[in-house]
Image (cartoon, rainbow, N blue to C red; front, side, top):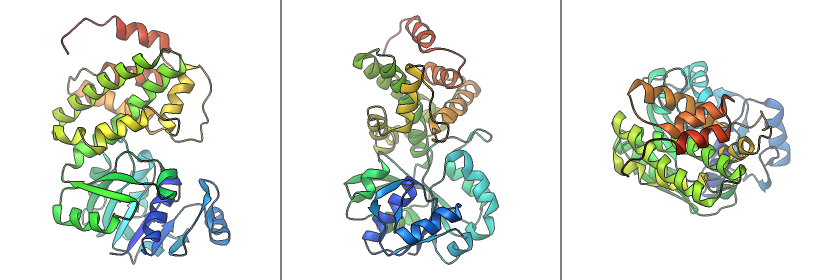
Length: 321
């Protein structure tokens, strides 16, 4: 199976490195021509993974046409930019196996990445690769387990075999919706947990938010038709545990900055902020109680303070767990 990675950020580059170390030739596309040229000359992605050399099997390119000859494209771009990239490059992408490597819910369509890809490229087979992982760990060759979700089980099995490497173990499912929602909604909860820790509200408060946040994730997922067990796996509970407890998570760090009332670098992509708004809209549409998600949406927009959110959550009516 010939593979290309569209998106030369940290995660896309890390996936390309892992595949290349396993002997797979990989085209790695990035839109910034100067940065791609620098990668070719230096043999490193200095902007994102400066300490990790690129194997010679990686072929950096800023020309999307170089992906035309590959069977499978891993799309490692921010969720809110995925639709535009797919529309812009439809002629190249349509008919291929497309694997989304982003986590979120589209703000306009209120759907996940596989629906975006399938709608834009109807002759393609869409899948998603998600789960508890940091790009730096994958690039360094540290053991990581991910979920590959594809409605077509035969394609999913082929992808599982192709994307598994010595340090990357792939599990598969046909529940694309559950995998998407687990990966998207855990970012919302990571912002909430970061805010709690940034405001010095304590580990106990973080544990409570993770637990009640997980309940919200399952409520929305099940209402929309996902399988409950998917949310208990790598793409749900596993990713939640990682992202809500580590400073490596951009969403967690963004939450910390909110809790401390400090500015956050606007050049850093925080998928959870947009996802909170989209998930809040979905919750309202389906009449689902998601107070933490709603609070994160308001907090990320600057409409409320952490203390306002805390007061609102603690004053909610008591209920059975």
